[in-house]
Image (tube, rainbow, N blue to C red; front, top):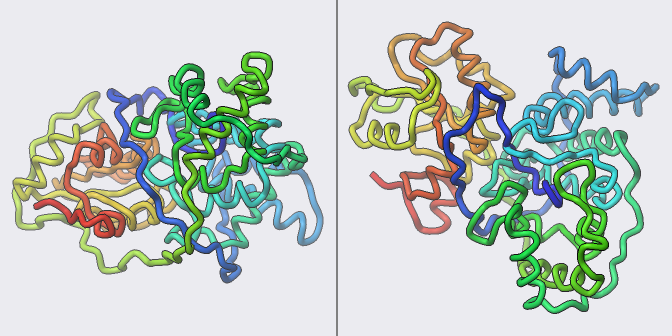
Length: 394
């Protein structure tokens, strides 16, 4: 989230260190109705990390205390891989802090909930709401938001006055002051994209003003109060608001992953011969070639199933990093198993580590990740691909 909660995943640990930073540009994501969903029970998480974070969630009694613990468990299961156990971020792919005072004062509960529910398409922040095919219903999202809110101040009063700045002047200021971190509309930077349409649909003028003026201490996003004049800040706000998508009829995209997806691609094909970097990473070019040559392999999409539904490598199966039970169904022979994510290494690295603990010999992480794959026009399948009239290449 850098300046805002665009929520991406990033700065991977040393074993998952990326060799390339190329990322796909943001595209127009779909939006939908956040209608109430059936209440479901939160997953039980028993890892040491989750125990630690739950102990920091504060003690409570009755339903409030139980909901608080459920929110902490949800955070441990779905969020801490990238946003860190304490919520301070930057555990993977520069995923921003979710607990900085400035962010929590500026972000409403619905802003945070929308980011969780709908994600930030074409970034490493997947959609986690069932309305998009993710694992969490609205009741669970509310529990998670409540837990995050407990870690810092309440939502404050924002200056939601009409935007009076000049978008053209704001563009020039953005290029000079912001673009080196937040990127451009066709180029992802090291901080969250401010051109992402889901973000722009949710970020009010007051939210943007607050973020620019206050920054996100102690993250790399520093305050611009005193560095930019009030007029210049208003120009940047005007520029960002000019990028916001027009109001549309929100389309529900609730869908389920088919439960009969075959695990092995080209089961009668020969095994590929991969050369791994650091005994762990296989290049996208090698995997693309293996698919073109109809080699036998398994491709595991480690993201939320919501992102698999939007776009995925043809023949891949969604086995997310937070629920790897289906890995035991993969043949334990010489078949190569390649896991990928958008990080590009962290979630997929969790899957590969789980496979190796179970004794699978031929395993690898897709080195550049799925966003590089998409950006370079490699074969893709999925709802977003079909919607844009770009079926998978043979």
